[in-house]
Length: 208
Image 1 (cartoon, rainbow, N blue to C red):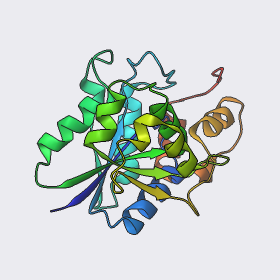
Image 2: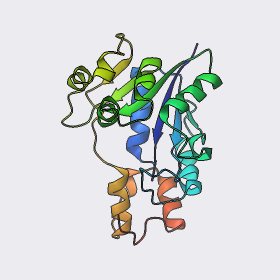
Image 3: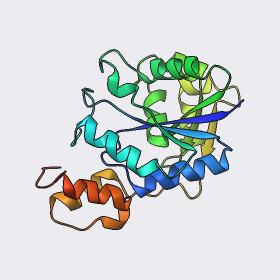
């Protein structure tokens, strides 16, 4: 039985922090693989600044040297109004029926789920396991205890909380801003992705 983490994000663009986070989680949580899962640009709740094609290419470029990392375009292929994380996890449990799967997310998303902001939130928590990364200013244990959805579906193994060392705040937003305003974010993302962005004039002159 393999242990697999599902790491969903917009990856707009993928950054060195994404890669470092995935590598650190894989090491600490003894994961055999981490699946990088870019979301679709059809989603109404997210504004994306580059196309699915560009984000997909950058994810593949970024992870190609690490045999533990896999890119999957499942969510990009779905109708955005029909897909939730619950359906996504159901899909991957069907693909990997003999393995143990974890959804990787930040503590800010844990709060959103606990407040019922995600589709099928109760079933999502009841039927899956999660690796939750720290975010500055968020008490993860308090977030779980305050939410009936989270605390009543926690059997003691539902949440693996990762605290120290995973609260770096360098973001894709910051990198987009630097590109847009003529800054130099070169060492915040993989060299090949930096070159790809420059070659394709991504994020240049955009209002972020």
